[in-house]
Length: 98
Image 1: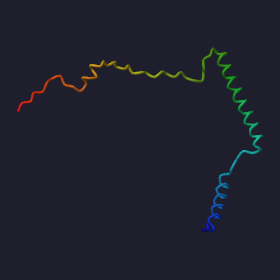
Image 2: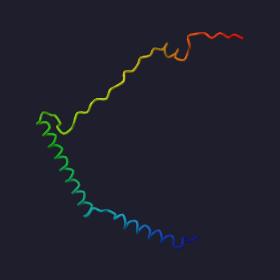
Image 3: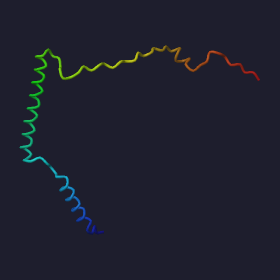
Image 4: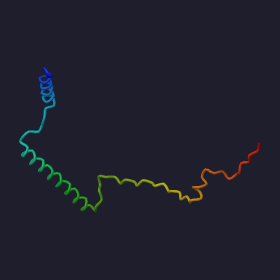
């Protein structure tokens, strides 16, 4: 069985898709991009450490964040075994009158 021109149509379709997506939009070699990413990460960590040091200098209170209220917890009822066993039972006896 021959695939005919299906292979060429698939190739053209794939090339059109790759051209439309733009591929890898970042410029430079992979090693260069890795170095730039590492520098950005170091800068981000340094900024985070500076912010943490500033908060410690101000008494450890974060000024930009509002305090989050704690969620209320519902008190659980404690049920004993007798309550659980008699949950669906009625206390009155039924009389069978014919």
